[in-house]
Length: 188
Image (cartoon, rainbow, N blue to C red; front, top):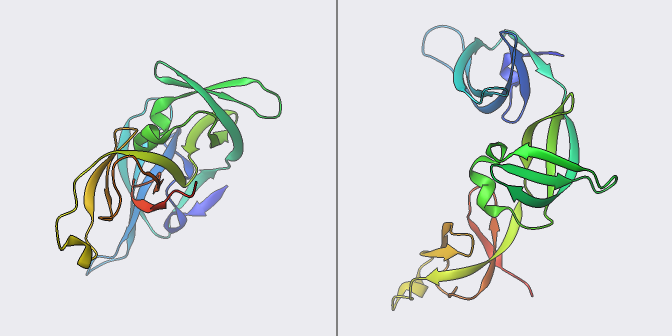
């Protein structure tokens, strides 16, 4: 399906120069002189190589239709995730690198949304929030609670985040999977 280049969004899969690419980032740039263009960072689905490409906003690109399917995460086998189809109970394997920075937030039996192009996995989306335990948190500095300051803490998956001063080690909190930011205390 052809679409204008200025409609390219992160997560889409496009075909360019005979290859399939997944879009990582896009930015529309309007220079002081001349027409606007779109700068796109994308990854080759076969080789994993990244590249940047520029198009004029009026150019057209070939967008591939993706099929979204939900799978349950079973286990990791080296650099491969083993997922299970909840309807047919068949196993499905995808490379860990499709998760990128979100890999530490993977939990047993988590429901993952996998984008497929002609049966090949091109992207994986985790749920927006996960509940994790704080294993390390700096002590509260006197007077720190008066302002809306945050302190560093380490989560049970090894990721570091910033939490409000009233959160202590051993507590369970809800964090965003896309940037590891604090959302709220976990409701038991």
